[in-house]
Image 1: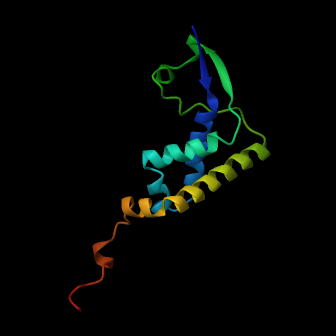
Image 2: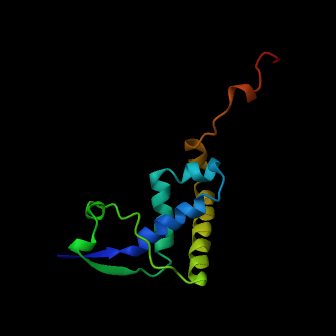
Image 3: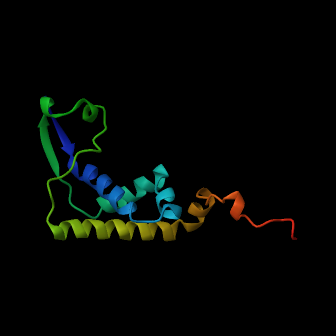
Amino acid sequence: MKMVVNLTQQSIVGEIESVLNTYPSHPYQQAFAIPDLRQELITFVLNRIPSFYSIMSDEQIPAEAKQGSLAYYKLPRKPLEQQLNLQNLIHQGICLIVQEKSDWISHRVCETVQPACEPSHWFG
């Protein structure tokens, strides 16, 4: 048995993780930890790049992949220009989504306030 595997999405998911790790936790990493926003970012990038598929035999496909977890698949090393283009698209997607959904994000991503840093109500 052979299976067609879309390697593009798996590669994009890994690259999104790498790019998001360069952003501050609040609000970016917290916002894109929300599954709907993460999927919107993946879709934004996928719609702007060509897809790559590979045909794999049943023996080549790990059990995890057969269950739908292909996150660890990576495309072969990309030339620097393609890598930079992909990272640029991810940055554009992050900025666009945060701008368009800023109110929605601010209601769902609350910055944790340290009790010692909170202003005292004792002083009016």
